[in-house]
Amino acid sequence: MKYFALTFLLFFCMQTFAQKEKPKPFIEEMLKEVSSKRIEADIRKLVSFGTRNTNSDQDNPTRGIGAARDWIYNEFQKISAECSGCLEVEKQSFLQQPTANRRIPKPTVITNVFARLKGTSDPDRIYIVSAHYDSMCADPADGNCDAPGANDDASGVAAVLEMARIMSKRKFDATIIFLTVAGEEQGLLGAAYFAEKAKQENWNIQAMFTNDIIGGVTTFKNAPNRQTVRVFSEGVPSNETEAEAAIRRSVGGENDSASRQLARFIKETAEIYSPDFSVIMIYRRDRYLRGGDHIPFLERGFPAVRFTETNEDYNHQHQNVRIENGVFYGDTPEYVDFEYVAKVTKINLASIARLALAPSAPKNVRLITTRLTNDTELRWDASPEQDISGYEIVWRETTEPVWTNSVFVGNVTSYVVKGMSKDNYFFGVRAVDKDGNKSPVSFPKPGR
Ligand SMILES: [Zn+2]
Image (cartoon, rainbow, N blue to C red; front, side):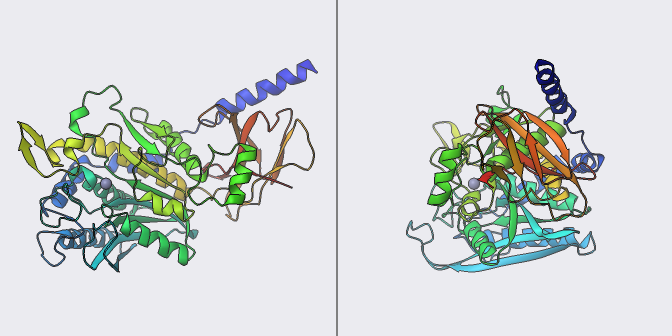
């Protein structure tokens, strides 16, 4: 009996080490193409519009949000032309009525600009990488002041454009949307419109990343945690129902939302593809009391995370450009580290690529509770993808932040983990295809 227990333990330890994924040349090739020079040029171009405040001029060809909108649209069109029209480029406009917070003082057209790279085998499954192209000075309603917004958030837009350039030359199983929104500074208005429309039309959005302030402000160039980016993810879903909350409380699921699994997937991606620049997972929806474009997606049940530089400098965000008592204030390109933006872009790119190449995460994953036992039985629905090779069971101690162990169990739809009680570990299931691409982890619900 003791011998069995020992072999059993050894078996699982071996599996844990055996599962470490090797980088795929297909993804590494794309990462090599990420150019900090192009990113810099894009950021400077966006800054050149003077202001991109949502209340600024929409018809002036050189200054204001309209000029920025048209430039982004044309960039997507150019990228599409280079891949024989592989991108569907859209301007999504709506009339925003004045908001209660007075940040939109009069009826204003808000336009999201995005490009869709259709998936080859699973086009209905969608992954979104996003940023906001609007900017602000100290007053979010002021459409006239200079608001360069180099870090917040031209850095994010540049990352999205760079990903579109590189990924559009390749094919992926699932659809990727390169999204840039406006009205962020007035209350996440563009993102909310996009997410609501997606919900109404039943889009199958499996992940949304917002990149907001990824410039790596140069103030912190020598900080000890310089080679990191924060990824914020919520633990308790923003759209949770009372019934779901009751189940979550009774199984201890507050650290295992789909967005938290997504954050773990991104951290894992960085460990595979970016050994010198890592992800700090922040177990929060966003920064303390603050918000971003991922929130309207979370509120509608779409898994989403936020990327933001590890250290922020508030002298270079949302400031009127000026010198005061010898101190410079303003979000100008001089304070953006283009190499840093490129590194964050690479983690985004590798993560979206892994997601869009992999099968969807297993559905209807249940932890079987028909009788009390010290074994753990999991069941799930077979994935619809044609190229499934099987499934991986993952687990961790309840106090661990990430999945620590895994075992490949083959092409089955149930598995009993012997001698490991569901009381003492968290378990999950992920799908694996024939090329070894792995989905994010699905966290089980109690079931039969
Ligand atoms: Zn922002």
